Image (tube, rainbow, N blue to C red):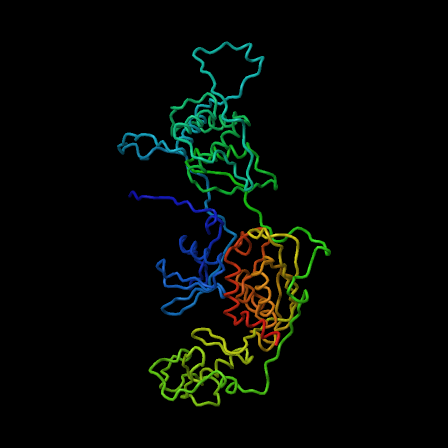
Length: 549
Protein backbone atom coordinates (compact mmCIF):
# COMPACT_ATOMS: atom_id res chain seq x y z
CA UNK A 1 0.00 0.00 0.00
CA UNK A 2 1.39 3.39 -1.01
CA UNK A 3 0.41 6.46 1.00
CA UNK A 4 1.62 10.03 0.50
CA UNK A 5 3.71 11.60 3.26
CA UNK A 6 4.81 15.15 3.90
CA UNK A 7 6.94 17.12 6.34
CA UNK A 8 6.29 20.53 7.86
CA UNK A 9 8.68 23.27 8.89
CA UNK A 10 7.78 25.40 11.92
CA UNK A 11 9.09 28.82 12.80
CA UNK A 12 11.73 28.78 15.58
CA UNK A 13 9.54 31.17 17.62
CA UNK A 14 6.57 28.77 17.58
CA UNK A 15 5.83 26.08 20.17
CA UNK A 16 7.55 23.22 18.29
CA UNK A 17 10.47 25.48 17.40
CA UNK A 18 11.04 26.18 21.11
CA UNK A 19 10.49 22.58 22.20
CA UNK A 20 7.21 23.46 24.00
CA UNK A 21 4.61 20.70 24.19
CA UNK A 22 1.08 21.18 25.60
CA UNK A 23 -0.64 18.07 26.98
CA UNK A 24 -4.03 17.20 28.47
CA UNK A 25 -4.79 14.57 31.11
CA UNK A 26 -6.89 11.68 29.84
CA UNK A 27 -9.22 9.39 31.82
CA UNK A 28 -6.37 7.00 32.67
CA UNK A 29 -4.39 9.72 34.41
CA UNK A 30 -1.71 9.80 31.70
CA UNK A 31 -0.89 12.80 29.52
CA UNK A 32 -1.69 13.15 25.82
CA UNK A 33 -0.07 15.86 23.66
CA UNK A 34 -2.29 18.20 21.67
CA UNK A 35 -2.09 18.23 17.90
CA UNK A 36 0.71 20.45 16.65
CA UNK A 37 -1.53 23.27 15.38
CA UNK A 38 -3.56 23.28 18.61
CA UNK A 39 -0.38 23.43 20.67
CA UNK A 40 0.87 26.36 18.60
CA UNK A 41 -2.41 28.22 19.18
CA UNK A 42 -2.29 27.59 22.94
CA UNK A 43 1.37 28.63 23.21
CA UNK A 44 0.72 31.83 21.23
CA UNK A 45 -2.04 32.87 23.65
CA UNK A 46 0.11 31.88 26.64
CA UNK A 47 3.01 34.05 25.45
CA UNK A 48 0.63 36.98 24.89
CA UNK A 49 -0.30 36.74 28.61
CA UNK A 50 -3.95 36.03 27.80
CA UNK A 51 -5.87 34.62 30.78
CA UNK A 52 -7.56 32.03 28.54
CA UNK A 53 -7.89 30.94 24.92
CA UNK A 54 -10.96 29.67 23.06
CA UNK A 55 -10.19 26.82 20.64
CA UNK A 56 -13.55 27.06 18.86
CA UNK A 57 -12.13 29.01 15.85
CA UNK A 58 -9.85 26.06 15.02
CA UNK A 59 -12.61 23.46 15.36
CA UNK A 60 -12.45 22.37 19.01
CA UNK A 61 -15.16 23.17 21.56
CA UNK A 62 -12.74 23.81 24.42
CA UNK A 63 -11.47 26.73 26.47
CA UNK A 64 -7.96 26.62 28.00
CA UNK A 65 -7.82 28.51 31.32
CA UNK A 66 -4.20 29.43 32.09
CA UNK A 67 -4.97 30.53 35.65
CA UNK A 68 -6.09 27.03 36.63
CA UNK A 69 -4.20 25.19 33.85
CA UNK A 70 -7.44 23.47 32.90
CA UNK A 71 -9.33 22.52 29.73
CA UNK A 72 -13.07 23.25 29.86
CA UNK A 73 -15.55 21.60 27.48
CA UNK A 74 -17.87 24.39 26.32
CA UNK A 75 -20.81 21.99 25.94
CA UNK A 76 -20.53 19.75 29.01
CA UNK A 77 -18.44 22.08 31.25
CA UNK A 78 -16.22 19.11 32.06
CA UNK A 79 -12.71 20.10 33.09
CA UNK A 80 -9.41 18.37 32.56
CA UNK A 81 -5.93 19.35 33.64
CA UNK A 82 -3.42 20.61 31.08
CA UNK A 83 0.29 21.15 31.38
CA UNK A 84 3.12 22.82 29.47
CA UNK A 85 6.31 20.81 29.02
CA UNK A 86 9.71 22.26 28.23
CA UNK A 87 11.79 19.10 28.67
CA UNK A 88 11.15 17.82 25.13
CA UNK A 89 13.05 18.86 22.02
CA UNK A 90 11.31 18.99 18.65
CA UNK A 91 11.67 17.16 16.37
CA UNK A 92 11.63 14.06 18.57
CA UNK A 93 13.59 11.60 16.42
CA UNK A 94 15.37 8.48 17.61
CA UNK A 95 17.58 6.00 15.80
CA UNK A 96 19.84 6.47 12.80
CA UNK A 97 18.86 7.67 9.36
CA UNK A 98 18.17 4.86 6.85
CA UNK A 99 20.63 4.28 4.03
CA UNK A 100 19.67 5.96 0.76
CA UNK A 101 17.87 3.56 -1.56
CA UNK A 102 16.30 3.74 -4.98
CA UNK A 103 12.51 3.69 -5.27
CA UNK A 104 10.75 1.33 -5.67
CA UNK A 105 12.53 -1.08 -3.33
CA UNK A 106 11.56 -4.23 -5.18
CA UNK A 107 13.60 -4.85 -8.36
CA UNK A 108 10.57 -6.56 -9.90
CA UNK A 109 8.57 -3.33 -9.98
CA UNK A 110 9.07 -1.11 -13.05
CA UNK A 111 10.98 2.09 -12.54
CA UNK A 112 9.96 5.35 -14.13
CA UNK A 113 12.57 7.41 -15.95
CA UNK A 114 14.09 10.10 -13.75
CA UNK A 115 12.64 13.56 -14.17
CA UNK A 116 14.66 16.71 -14.75
CA UNK A 117 16.77 17.75 -11.72
CA UNK A 118 15.36 20.45 -9.51
CA UNK A 119 17.05 23.83 -10.02
CA UNK A 120 16.18 25.34 -6.63
CA UNK A 121 19.18 26.63 -4.60
CA UNK A 122 18.77 23.97 -1.93
CA UNK A 123 18.78 21.04 -4.37
CA UNK A 124 21.70 22.51 -6.35
CA UNK A 125 23.74 22.72 -3.16
CA UNK A 126 22.76 19.20 -2.03
CA UNK A 127 23.65 17.69 -5.42
CA UNK A 128 27.04 19.38 -5.48
CA UNK A 129 27.86 18.21 -1.95
CA UNK A 130 26.79 14.65 -2.77
CA UNK A 131 28.99 14.67 -5.85
CA UNK A 132 31.97 15.97 -3.88
CA UNK A 133 31.57 13.36 -1.16
CA UNK A 134 30.96 10.45 -3.56
CA UNK A 135 33.99 11.05 -5.80
CA UNK A 136 36.39 12.10 -3.07
CA UNK A 137 37.64 14.90 -5.31
CA UNK A 138 38.50 17.22 -2.45
CA UNK A 139 41.88 15.81 -1.56
CA UNK A 140 44.20 18.22 0.19
CA UNK A 141 46.81 20.00 -1.87
CA UNK A 142 50.09 18.03 -1.98
CA UNK A 143 53.25 19.49 -0.54
CA UNK A 144 55.98 21.09 -2.63
CA UNK A 145 58.15 17.98 -2.49
CA UNK A 146 55.30 15.83 -3.69
CA UNK A 147 54.61 18.13 -6.62
CA UNK A 148 58.23 17.87 -7.77
CA UNK A 149 58.17 14.09 -7.81
CA UNK A 150 54.75 13.79 -9.44
CA UNK A 151 54.15 13.86 -13.17
CA UNK A 152 51.38 16.20 -14.28
CA UNK A 153 48.13 14.48 -15.22
CA UNK A 154 46.99 14.78 -18.76
CA UNK A 155 43.88 16.82 -19.20
CA UNK A 156 44.07 18.25 -15.69
CA UNK A 157 41.53 20.96 -15.10
CA UNK A 158 42.36 24.29 -13.60
CA UNK A 159 41.12 24.69 -10.04
CA UNK A 160 38.51 27.45 -9.84
CA UNK A 161 39.16 30.29 -7.40
CA UNK A 162 37.92 30.03 -3.80
CA UNK A 163 34.54 31.44 -2.97
CA UNK A 164 34.55 34.99 -1.64
CA UNK A 165 37.15 36.73 0.49
CA UNK A 166 36.88 34.16 3.27
CA UNK A 167 34.40 33.21 5.96
CA UNK A 168 32.14 35.86 7.34
CA UNK A 169 31.74 36.15 11.12
CA UNK A 170 28.73 34.98 13.05
CA UNK A 171 26.11 37.61 13.70
CA UNK A 172 24.62 38.48 17.08
CA UNK A 173 22.39 35.41 17.05
CA UNK A 174 25.18 33.10 16.02
CA UNK A 175 23.84 32.63 12.49
CA UNK A 176 26.43 32.41 9.74
CA UNK A 177 24.94 34.87 7.29
CA UNK A 178 26.05 35.69 3.80
CA UNK A 179 24.54 37.98 1.18
CA UNK A 180 21.27 39.60 2.13
CA UNK A 181 19.66 39.15 -1.31
CA UNK A 182 18.80 35.80 -2.94
CA UNK A 183 21.18 34.96 -5.74
CA UNK A 184 20.00 33.68 -9.15
CA UNK A 185 19.98 29.95 -9.69
CA UNK A 186 23.00 30.02 -12.04
CA UNK A 187 25.05 32.12 -9.62
CA UNK A 188 24.22 29.81 -6.75
CA UNK A 189 25.15 26.80 -8.88
CA UNK A 190 28.55 28.38 -9.56
CA UNK A 191 29.03 29.09 -5.84
CA UNK A 192 28.10 25.53 -4.92
CA UNK A 193 30.57 24.03 -7.40
CA UNK A 194 33.38 26.39 -6.44
CA UNK A 195 33.09 25.48 -2.76
CA UNK A 196 34.81 22.17 -3.38
CA UNK A 197 37.79 22.51 -5.74
CA UNK A 198 37.83 20.06 -8.60
CA UNK A 199 34.11 19.26 -8.58
CA UNK A 200 32.30 19.55 -11.89
CA UNK A 201 29.04 21.43 -12.05
CA UNK A 202 27.14 18.63 -13.72
CA UNK A 203 28.38 15.77 -11.55
CA UNK A 204 25.69 13.18 -10.83
CA UNK A 205 24.48 12.42 -7.33
CA UNK A 206 25.95 9.62 -5.25
CA UNK A 207 24.65 6.21 -6.41
CA UNK A 208 22.50 4.22 -3.97
CA UNK A 209 25.14 1.56 -3.41
CA UNK A 210 28.09 3.90 -2.83
CA UNK A 211 30.56 2.62 -0.28
CA UNK A 212 30.11 4.38 3.09
CA UNK A 213 33.82 4.02 3.82
CA UNK A 214 34.65 6.02 0.70
CA UNK A 215 32.32 8.77 1.90
CA UNK A 216 33.97 8.93 5.30
CA UNK A 217 37.41 9.14 3.72
CA UNK A 218 36.22 11.92 1.41
CA UNK A 219 34.80 13.89 4.34
CA UNK A 220 38.03 13.47 6.25
CA UNK A 221 40.00 15.00 3.39
CA UNK A 222 38.09 18.28 3.48
CA UNK A 223 40.33 20.99 4.89
CA UNK A 224 39.24 23.75 7.26
CA UNK A 225 38.87 26.45 4.60
CA UNK A 226 36.61 24.31 2.43
CA UNK A 227 34.47 23.40 5.43
CA UNK A 228 34.08 27.06 6.32
CA UNK A 229 33.11 27.93 2.75
CA UNK A 230 30.58 25.09 2.67
CA UNK A 231 29.00 26.22 5.93
CA UNK A 232 28.83 29.86 4.86
CA UNK A 233 27.36 29.09 1.43
CA UNK A 234 24.91 26.63 2.98
CA UNK A 235 23.60 29.25 5.41
CA UNK A 236 23.49 31.90 2.67
CA UNK A 237 21.38 29.73 0.39
CA UNK A 238 19.02 28.58 3.12
CA UNK A 239 18.44 32.03 4.59
CA UNK A 240 17.83 33.46 1.11
CA UNK A 241 15.31 30.70 0.33
CA UNK A 242 13.42 31.18 3.60
CA UNK A 243 14.31 27.91 5.34
CA UNK A 244 13.90 28.18 9.15
CA UNK A 245 17.08 28.12 11.20
CA UNK A 246 17.88 25.15 13.45
CA UNK A 247 19.45 25.97 16.85
CA UNK A 248 22.50 23.80 17.56
CA UNK A 249 23.73 23.58 21.14
CA UNK A 250 27.46 23.55 21.69
CA UNK A 251 28.11 20.63 24.03
CA UNK A 252 31.68 21.66 24.83
CA UNK A 253 30.96 25.00 26.51
CA UNK A 254 29.81 28.48 25.65
CA UNK A 255 32.38 29.15 22.89
CA UNK A 256 31.16 29.61 19.29
CA UNK A 257 30.48 26.49 17.25
CA UNK A 258 33.71 25.45 15.53
CA UNK A 259 33.51 26.26 11.80
CA UNK A 260 34.78 22.78 10.91
CA UNK A 261 32.07 21.13 13.01
CA UNK A 262 29.49 23.43 11.46
CA UNK A 263 30.67 22.50 7.97
CA UNK A 264 30.54 18.75 8.62
CA UNK A 265 27.05 19.06 10.13
CA UNK A 266 25.85 21.04 7.14
CA UNK A 267 27.28 18.47 4.70
CA UNK A 268 25.74 15.47 6.45
CA UNK A 269 22.28 17.02 6.83
CA UNK A 270 22.31 18.31 3.25
CA UNK A 271 23.37 14.92 1.92
CA UNK A 272 20.40 13.41 3.75
CA UNK A 273 18.09 15.92 2.09
CA UNK A 274 17.52 17.98 5.25
CA UNK A 275 17.81 21.78 5.27
CA UNK A 276 20.14 23.20 7.91
CA UNK A 277 21.20 26.61 9.06
CA UNK A 278 23.33 26.58 12.18
CA UNK A 279 22.63 29.11 14.88
CA UNK A 280 23.67 29.52 18.46
CA UNK A 281 20.69 29.04 20.84
CA UNK A 282 19.68 32.21 22.70
CA UNK A 283 20.57 32.42 26.36
CA UNK A 284 18.14 32.87 29.22
CA UNK A 285 18.85 36.19 30.97
CA UNK A 286 16.88 36.30 34.22
CA UNK A 287 18.73 39.04 36.09
CA UNK A 288 20.40 42.36 35.20
CA UNK A 289 24.13 43.00 35.61
CA UNK A 290 25.25 43.51 39.24
CA UNK A 291 24.06 46.79 40.76
CA UNK A 292 25.71 48.50 43.74
CA UNK A 293 23.66 49.99 46.58
CA UNK A 294 24.61 53.51 45.50
CA UNK A 295 23.06 52.89 42.05
CA UNK A 296 19.69 51.81 43.47
CA UNK A 297 17.29 54.77 43.58
CA UNK A 298 13.76 55.33 44.80
CA UNK A 299 10.98 55.73 42.24
CA UNK A 300 9.75 59.31 41.71
CA UNK A 301 6.09 59.67 42.61
CA UNK A 302 6.01 56.45 44.67
CA UNK A 303 6.45 56.66 48.41
CA UNK A 304 8.80 54.34 50.30
CA UNK A 305 10.76 51.46 48.75
CA UNK A 306 9.08 48.48 50.43
CA UNK A 307 5.78 47.37 51.84
CA UNK A 308 4.75 44.53 54.12
CA UNK A 309 1.41 42.80 54.26
CA UNK A 310 -0.27 40.84 57.02
CA UNK A 311 -3.56 39.04 57.31
CA UNK A 312 -6.50 41.43 57.12
CA UNK A 313 -9.49 40.33 59.11
CA UNK A 314 -12.93 40.67 57.56
CA UNK A 315 -15.23 43.29 58.96
CA UNK A 316 -17.12 41.92 61.92
CA UNK A 317 -20.62 42.67 63.13
CA UNK A 318 -22.37 42.23 59.75
CA UNK A 319 -24.13 39.10 58.63
CA UNK A 320 -23.93 37.95 54.97
CA UNK A 321 -27.52 39.10 54.49
CA UNK A 322 -26.62 42.59 55.71
CA UNK A 323 -23.59 42.75 53.42
CA UNK A 324 -25.53 41.68 50.32
CA UNK A 325 -28.41 44.01 51.08
CA UNK A 326 -26.20 46.94 49.95
CA UNK A 327 -25.78 45.46 46.47
CA UNK A 328 -29.24 43.95 45.80
CA UNK A 329 -32.74 45.03 44.87
CA UNK A 330 -35.63 42.65 45.55
CA UNK A 331 -37.57 41.42 42.53
CA UNK A 332 -41.27 40.86 43.10
CA UNK A 333 -41.97 39.27 39.72
CA UNK A 334 -39.00 37.08 38.75
CA UNK A 335 -38.38 36.51 35.03
CA UNK A 336 -38.79 33.08 33.44
CA UNK A 337 -35.08 32.35 33.57
CA UNK A 338 -32.69 30.02 35.38
CA UNK A 339 -30.66 31.06 38.39
CA UNK A 340 -27.10 30.49 37.12
CA UNK A 341 -25.95 29.45 40.61
CA UNK A 342 -28.38 26.62 41.41
CA UNK A 343 -29.69 26.18 37.81
CA UNK A 344 -33.31 26.16 39.01
CA UNK A 345 -36.00 28.46 37.63
CA UNK A 346 -36.14 31.86 39.33
CA UNK A 347 -39.89 31.38 39.72
CA UNK A 348 -39.21 28.25 41.82
CA UNK A 349 -37.41 27.96 45.19
CA UNK A 350 -33.59 27.77 45.23
CA UNK A 351 -32.06 24.36 44.65
CA UNK A 352 -29.21 24.95 47.11
CA UNK A 353 -29.00 22.08 49.65
CA UNK A 354 -26.22 23.29 51.95
CA UNK A 355 -26.41 25.08 55.33
CA UNK A 356 -29.64 27.00 55.50
CA UNK A 357 -29.37 30.83 55.29
CA UNK A 358 -31.90 32.92 57.16
CA UNK A 359 -33.61 34.20 53.99
CA UNK A 360 -36.43 32.37 52.27
CA UNK A 361 -35.38 30.15 49.33
CA UNK A 362 -37.87 31.70 46.90
CA UNK A 363 -36.79 35.36 47.33
CA UNK A 364 -35.12 36.79 44.20
CA UNK A 365 -32.79 39.80 43.99
CA UNK A 366 -31.15 41.85 41.22
CA UNK A 367 -27.59 43.18 41.47
CA UNK A 368 -27.71 46.97 41.29
CA UNK A 369 -24.94 47.67 38.76
CA UNK A 370 -24.95 44.78 36.29
CA UNK A 371 -28.64 43.84 36.62
CA UNK A 372 -28.20 40.05 36.82
CA UNK A 373 -30.87 38.22 38.81
CA UNK A 374 -30.37 35.35 41.31
CA UNK A 375 -31.97 33.67 44.28
CA UNK A 376 -30.81 35.68 47.31
CA UNK A 377 -30.60 32.31 49.06
CA UNK A 378 -27.94 31.25 46.49
CA UNK A 379 -26.00 34.51 46.75
CA UNK A 380 -25.76 34.18 50.54
CA UNK A 381 -24.47 30.62 50.19
CA UNK A 382 -21.90 31.76 47.60
CA UNK A 383 -20.74 34.58 49.90
CA UNK A 384 -20.34 32.19 52.84
CA UNK A 385 -18.14 29.93 50.70
CA UNK A 386 -15.84 32.82 49.72
CA UNK A 387 -13.44 35.11 51.55
CA UNK A 388 -16.22 36.88 53.51
CA UNK A 389 -14.46 40.21 53.13
CA UNK A 390 -17.55 42.35 52.52
CA UNK A 391 -17.28 42.17 48.72
CA UNK A 392 -19.30 40.28 46.13
CA UNK A 393 -18.46 39.31 42.55
CA UNK A 394 -21.21 38.63 40.05
CA UNK A 395 -20.81 34.99 38.91
CA UNK A 396 -22.02 35.88 35.40
CA UNK A 397 -20.16 39.06 34.36
CA UNK A 398 -17.53 39.20 37.17
CA UNK A 399 -18.54 42.74 38.20
CA UNK A 400 -17.11 43.41 41.67
CA UNK A 401 -19.19 45.03 44.41
CA UNK A 402 -17.22 46.46 47.30
CA UNK A 403 -13.45 45.93 47.70
CA UNK A 404 -12.24 42.48 46.71
CA UNK A 405 -9.42 41.01 48.79
CA UNK A 406 -7.50 37.76 48.51
CA UNK A 407 -5.79 35.17 50.69
CA UNK A 408 -2.14 36.01 50.02
CA UNK A 409 0.16 34.89 52.87
CA UNK A 410 2.17 37.52 54.80
CA UNK A 411 5.30 38.80 53.08
CA UNK A 412 7.27 41.78 51.82
CA UNK A 413 7.31 43.71 48.53
CA UNK A 414 10.35 45.85 47.61
CA UNK A 415 10.58 48.19 44.62
CA UNK A 416 13.28 50.53 43.32
CA UNK A 417 15.05 51.81 40.20
CA UNK A 418 18.14 50.20 38.67
CA UNK A 419 20.30 51.87 35.96
CA UNK A 420 19.67 49.33 33.19
CA UNK A 421 17.19 49.23 30.32
CA UNK A 422 14.85 46.42 29.35
CA UNK A 423 14.76 45.06 25.77
CA UNK A 424 12.24 47.15 23.87
CA UNK A 425 12.56 50.07 26.31
CA UNK A 426 15.99 51.55 25.59
CA UNK A 427 15.07 55.09 26.64
CA UNK A 428 14.25 54.44 30.30
CA UNK A 429 15.61 52.71 33.36
CA UNK A 430 14.05 49.65 34.99
CA UNK A 431 11.76 49.23 37.99
CA UNK A 432 12.73 46.11 39.90
CA UNK A 433 10.19 44.47 42.22
CA UNK A 434 11.29 41.85 44.75
CA UNK A 435 8.64 39.67 46.40
CA UNK A 436 9.57 37.75 49.56
CA UNK A 437 7.14 35.30 51.18
CA UNK A 438 8.32 32.73 53.74
CA UNK A 439 6.70 29.31 54.23
CA UNK A 440 4.19 29.00 57.05
CA UNK A 441 0.90 27.56 58.27
CA UNK A 442 -2.36 27.99 56.38
CA UNK A 443 -5.08 30.06 57.97
CA UNK A 444 -8.86 29.57 57.99
CA UNK A 445 -9.19 31.33 54.61
CA UNK A 446 -6.78 28.92 52.87
CA UNK A 447 -7.51 25.53 51.22
CA UNK A 448 -6.20 23.39 54.11
CA UNK A 449 -6.32 25.33 57.41
CA UNK A 450 -3.65 24.29 59.91
CA UNK A 451 -1.49 22.59 57.28
CA UNK A 452 1.94 23.94 56.37
CA UNK A 453 2.55 25.56 52.97
CA UNK A 454 5.77 25.94 50.98
CA UNK A 455 7.10 29.05 49.21
CA UNK A 456 9.33 28.04 46.28
CA UNK A 457 11.47 30.43 44.26
CA UNK A 458 11.47 33.37 46.67
CA UNK A 459 12.62 36.07 46.55
CA UNK A 460 11.08 36.52 43.12
CA UNK A 461 12.44 39.35 40.96
CA UNK A 462 10.13 41.10 38.50
CA UNK A 463 10.71 43.99 36.10
CA UNK A 464 8.82 46.98 34.68
CA UNK A 465 10.02 49.80 32.43
CA UNK A 466 10.40 53.13 34.25
CA UNK A 467 7.93 54.83 31.92
CA UNK A 468 4.70 56.64 32.67
CA UNK A 469 2.65 53.49 32.07
CA UNK A 470 5.19 51.34 33.94
CA UNK A 471 4.85 53.52 37.06
CA UNK A 472 1.07 53.36 36.71
CA UNK A 473 1.25 49.54 36.72
CA UNK A 474 3.52 49.64 39.79
CA UNK A 475 1.07 51.78 41.76
CA UNK A 476 -1.76 49.39 40.94
CA UNK A 477 0.41 46.40 41.88
CA UNK A 478 0.95 48.03 45.27
CA UNK A 479 -2.83 48.20 45.70
CA UNK A 480 -3.10 44.54 44.67
CA UNK A 481 -0.38 43.66 47.19
CA UNK A 482 -2.19 45.47 50.00
CA UNK A 483 -5.38 43.64 49.09
CA UNK A 484 -3.53 40.29 49.09
CA UNK A 485 -4.26 39.58 45.42
CA UNK A 486 -0.76 38.99 43.96
CA UNK A 487 -0.26 35.48 45.33
CA UNK A 488 -2.43 32.67 46.70
CA UNK A 489 -1.95 29.19 48.14
CA UNK A 490 -2.79 26.38 45.75
CA UNK A 491 -1.29 23.82 43.35
CA UNK A 492 1.62 24.84 41.12
CA UNK A 493 0.82 24.52 37.41
CA UNK A 494 4.51 23.95 36.58
CA UNK A 495 5.59 21.46 39.27
CA UNK A 496 2.24 20.01 40.38
CA UNK A 497 3.10 20.65 44.03
CA UNK A 498 0.08 21.36 46.24
CA UNK A 499 -0.12 23.66 49.27
CA UNK A 500 2.42 26.08 47.85
CA UNK A 501 2.48 29.81 47.04
CA UNK A 502 1.42 30.45 43.42
CA UNK A 503 0.76 33.50 41.23
CA UNK A 504 -2.84 34.72 41.35
CA UNK A 505 -3.94 35.72 37.82
CA UNK A 506 -1.75 38.86 37.57
CA UNK A 507 1.15 38.10 35.25
CA UNK A 508 4.65 39.40 36.01
CA UNK A 509 7.80 39.62 33.91
CA UNK A 510 10.56 37.59 35.58
CA UNK A 511 13.11 37.62 32.72
CA UNK A 512 15.25 40.75 32.51
CA UNK A 513 17.17 40.42 29.25
CA UNK A 514 15.34 37.72 27.25
CA UNK A 515 11.88 36.39 26.48
CA UNK A 516 12.45 32.65 26.07
CA UNK A 517 9.66 31.57 28.43
CA UNK A 518 7.17 34.30 27.51
CA UNK A 519 7.83 36.07 30.82
CA UNK A 520 10.32 38.63 29.56
CA UNK A 521 10.89 41.50 27.17
CA UNK A 522 10.35 42.77 24.55
CA UNK A 523 6.56 42.48 24.81
CA UNK A 524 4.71 45.47 23.40
CA UNK A 525 1.33 44.43 24.85
CA UNK A 526 2.39 43.43 28.36
CA UNK A 527 1.58 46.67 30.20
CA UNK A 528 -1.90 46.87 28.64
CA UNK A 529 -2.53 43.19 29.41
CA UNK A 530 -1.55 43.49 33.06
CA UNK A 531 -3.74 46.61 33.44
CA UNK A 532 -6.66 44.55 32.13
CA UNK A 533 -5.85 41.72 34.57
CA UNK A 534 -5.74 44.17 37.47
CA UNK A 535 -9.06 45.66 36.36
CA UNK A 536 -10.55 42.16 36.46
CA UNK A 537 -9.53 42.07 40.13
CA UNK A 538 -11.33 45.38 40.74
CA UNK A 539 -8.14 47.48 40.72
CA UNK A 540 -8.03 50.62 38.59
CA UNK A 541 -6.83 54.22 38.90
CA UNK A 542 -9.78 54.90 41.18
CA UNK A 543 -8.43 52.25 43.54
CA UNK A 544 -5.30 54.28 44.32
CA UNK A 545 -7.51 57.17 45.49
CA UNK A 546 -9.55 54.78 47.64
CA UNK A 547 -6.39 53.43 49.28
CA UNK A 548 -5.27 56.96 50.17
CA UNK A 549 -8.68 57.69 51.71
